[in-house]
Length: 441
Image 1: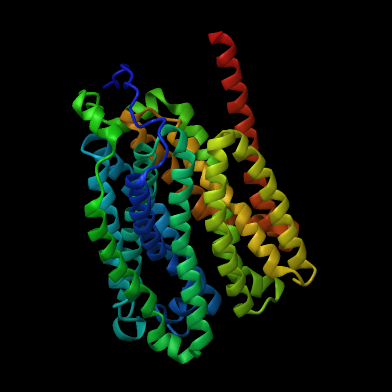
Image 2: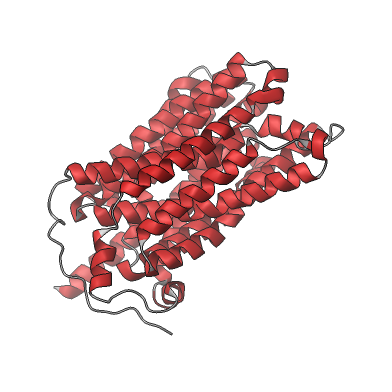
């Protein structure tokens, strides 16, 4: 087995400096490309209902067609590890920037193609098969994009600003959700059902494809990370399979990253992505009101990621993640409790809970610090994507199991369970850090 050189990297001159204009440009271009790519990935779920009517036979029961569309949506999650592992391998061996650009290209192409697909009425069973294939390519792309983006900005930022950099990048990703939510809300408000099925559903995908190719062009102006450049110059790159090194020498980092990713997936998938569909069906909230609340929550999430990232630099990422996870439990129960009581404060509580979901902006900082630079991309990508594939694809099943026992509050219980797992992980890491500090003194 190939080992990673144990020689430490020398301290870089930019580690203690403040963020400068060059850093701001890197963060802006990275976040913009990430927003467009994440929009391409999540807009699918906002259009689940029209897709279920267009890509399956007309005599299919509505609930079955919707389940099948969500199954295709889940296929994107299951494909993420493949893209993440392959791109991370080359990212650790050949450079972060190349994979960073490739991932957004691989997202733009299938998104544009989805907007041009014929429906079941035109090509029969080929329609859902093509939709599934393109969704898998989207999953491969986002599997390399998200971990690669976190590693890219973390290795560009000064050491004391990594939390803000990762939080800002995560905020950029969530802007993609906000754009998708706003566009879906506008389409539902301005088009009738026939127009939405006729041509309206294509608009978000066509726009996403065009903007995705713009993001490819913008990323030409980014530089390779200083960390990777220095490792290459000092011949400290991993010589072999970085993932093999991760699984043999950094299993603790993998476990920690998977546990905090579970909380991230639950918070984003349940509160931000699923609730606009759950609220009308389970709590009788008007669909337009649900989409408006979702837009407010997505805006709160964007602001929350930046806020929590800034706090992580000031107070430490583990303490902020611990307190933020507890706050998420309280905010989610308040939101679902209000929905169960009639939703009198739905908009304000949804916006607040979106802000509290912003604690996910601290998760990438924890994961970046869990692996050494030579295998960082591979370690983070493997842990994040495998966890997201398992937990993201299994969220609906887990909530369904809980619903049989806890009724309409099941989604809140699921988010709370994962947040408490995050709290326990933080306590364990803080205790281990104190023990290590005591031994060294």
